[in-house]
Image 1 (tube, rainbow, N blue to C red):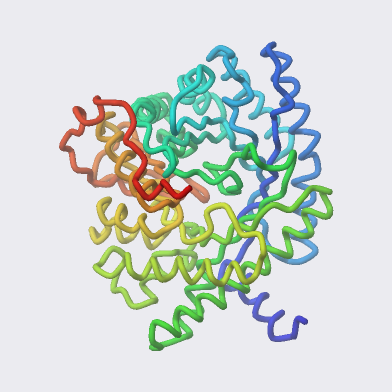
Image 2: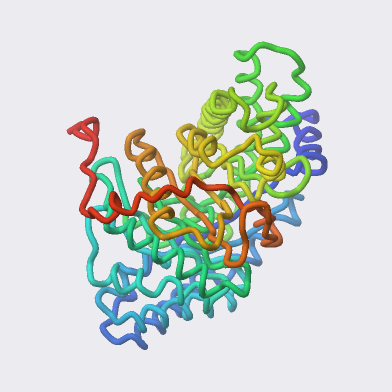
Length: 452
């Protein structure tokens, strides 16, 4: 049973500590929309999305008003489009992207994810055609997000796909160069991608999912940070327990919203993603959590250990609060979206090498990192390959969302606005891995993948 102190504590989390439901995401299968006729395919996609998610935004707003819980985003994810489009032309895939945009605008949602492909072991004609037009699709839409999975622990790393994604990122940056190269902020390269992730830009509806499902992403860095500050100088075991209990409370709020959304939309509940997803708002920073744990500044020695402890405690608390935890679930470290991360980069304590080390224990990877616009393709490919290797070797999800900002160099910054925040342009190691990338082929799966 709920008691008065629990209710008052939750109210304080919302009012003072930036607790929110970051997203209600409806996953929709498009597998029954397949058609050899491009126009018919687009019509079926539009009709299904707009019918299934017709009441998504209204329901989210109703729950928000009734319970007083902020629900920041209402989103839709769909089956990876390359699986639906098959061998249609590249131009046909652009039509699908515009159809997704039209559906998103009709629904009034924030983003729609799933314009992507799964190419961890090889590429079909459909996947090649879709990837070839990702830059154009992202440049010609505002709400469409794209992701490409290039590796799994079981399959190894598709280096040909990574080489292709380096070109794709550079072209996406170029085509949106007059708008801060914003196209790259909607494009993620994954290893071990989860099929039930409600967070953009990497969300898509997996092929093992129901026809339609509700996934909810919660977020509460400010709540965790405040709990740690109140704990004072306790030892690390006690601190981990405090984080765990706080994550439990945050996740219970998400469970309530998910249950209500599922019931009102007559759609199965999928998972709660209990990630700590920061925003540029003061007091809503994962970096500041780490600093409250005792670090002088995020990026100092000890940062990776503190992040590992935080991530583990969040997961332990969350799984006690919900029987269906999934997605990414843990702590996000997107540079541009976290005020503490931004500050740490600006003062020189947080480098891309340290960020890479931190991704071995976080939930996402190198996320929302602005780099010089003249960064060569092979260096971008090297960044992707390094990060993807961490995911494959550790049997975990990792991802890369880097933004080569045209016309910007180290020492400058770029303002993306809203939840995307602003980012200092980060210094990279300019030594070229071009010959290594050009070898192509696949890096074999690690030996510990043989678990059958």
